[in-house]
Image (cartoon, rainbow, N blue to C red; front, side):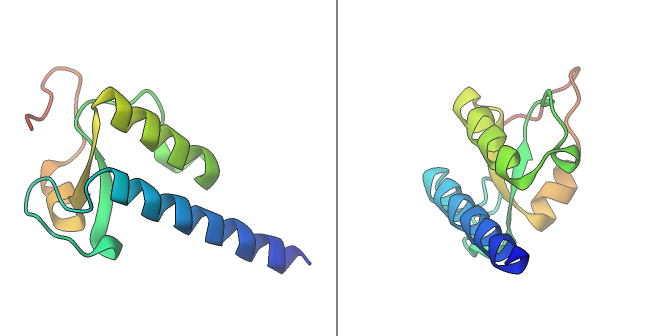
Length: 94
């Protein structure tokens, strides 16, 4: 029973993530990578929350809110690592 709930929760997360990727344009902002399993959410300005300390359900909602504010874009893993963590003093240009 618990396993079924975990699978259902994971499936809902995957669906919401896929929909958010579609909403955000389905490609890396910096190199045009289009494979969805390679895409990550990249903050261009410092976010007021920590993704590692947030549940999956809440995290997707927060990414959507940050996208609406204009501080979150899609980036492939390579570009996301190159850009690094944003700071308040020097925001990463689009």
